[in-house]
Length: 324
Image (spheres, rainbow, N blue to C red):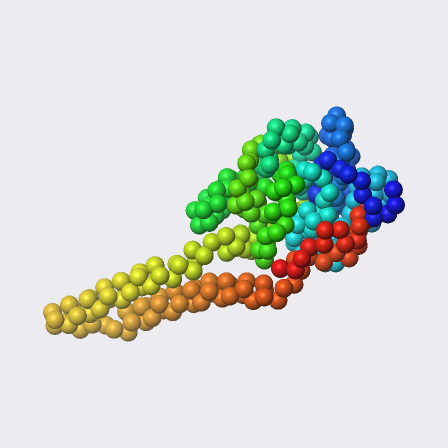
């Protein structure tokens, strides 16, 4: 088969990778072992998200040994969700499974996801069951983020939701039409509303390296997810306005009552406290409004959501994504 040509495949495995060179061969071997009993035609699409540690050369070398391994290299680090979207655009399978490259998403679960798809489910999601080694902070932050997100957006996500999932080609084509700036794919998949079943899995230890999601990135990701799915933070201003107006009215009643009773009202502390409170609320609201305006500004620039610098085993402009 010539370079850039692909044969028909039933199942695509899409894996975004950032500085995961040490995991490339182990991942391919584990996926191959898990899918071997199914005797189906599959491909593994590895997306190097601007990696700097030799991930892309490792992908190219893996393709040379196994033509089912295909690679997409992004020009820089666009982030996990955008790298995953890039893999979705290049995947050729009738069903597409996405998973992480650190082997924490267990490859041995792949046949179960495929079997559920054969039973007619368009979406096969997974839910992570935390092991005893998971930190209390990780368990609680996951639980309350999904609780908060579900309440704000109306899109129900359970704790432990992940990007380890199978999508039917019909779902994938609809997902690629969504032009959200800040991608939160697990929320978008649920929002699309296709028939879904959910499997559970036990998260394994990382094969190599360390997590790329520190607290700062987690907070940024959480904020992007919430503002992409809900305008409720904007409406927060109405309620904060009622609260601060109520406090101001109570303060006014207090001042009037003290004056009528002939007492001296110490105004400096109370006035400054009230002003500080109101200005604090005002700046919070300006920050929220600015966040949404910034998102509109970024979308109006119509920049692509990712840029591909190289591919291996795939047509160069296969399913090239449109600009936002």
